Length: 302
Image 1: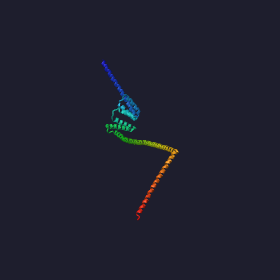
Image 2: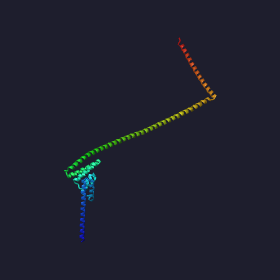
Image 3: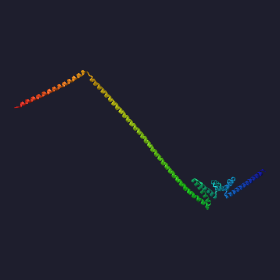
Image 4: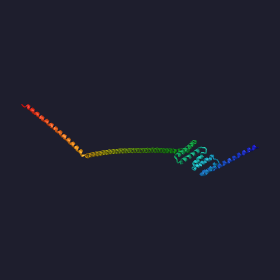
């Protein structure tokens, strides 16, 4: 009996759940239909709200996510629409729409690198859609159009990169030149400072040499002056001694002077006497010669 009651309860629960699911599905279907009507009327903001209400009940609903992504694309909310496109299974239309979203994102990108990246993503999705339908002319047109835009952007990017590289090289070259000029200027300044220091040392040494010479000259002059003073002192002393001796001679006693005078007179008298004696002898010699001559003259006179 208990076992039968258990089975009955289980069956009733399943019936209730199925009834609730059917009711929820009907509610979502109504919201989807209402949102589609608003979308067709161009009332995209109202349609978005309806689709979002349906996703609150079933967030994984493929149709609601796809339609909401389309509505967000219409009001230019491209990143939000991309999020909902990524919630659905990819087919040709989904790839096409995702490609269109990336193309729009590229159009609105301010940075060149970001613009190129979005266009590359657009081409990738267009290419995936083309693989699913090779005869879709719209897909091929979109692909070729974005490819041309991308080619131009890459050329522009290369030009900018070359320009930037050139500017950086020029800047580096200029910095190098400035650095070399600065180094040359510093070397010149160092050389001048070194020369000035050397000149200062030379001047100092020269001044010291001149000072030494002046000191030597002064010393020599001082020594010469001292020698001169010494000579003058010696001469003065000698003069004093001579004067003293002269004075001493002048102050001699009359007796000494008389004795000296007598001695002088005596010497003169002896000199005169010697002269007389010599004269007398010479006279005698002359007389003898005369006599001898007379005798010879008589001897041969016959």
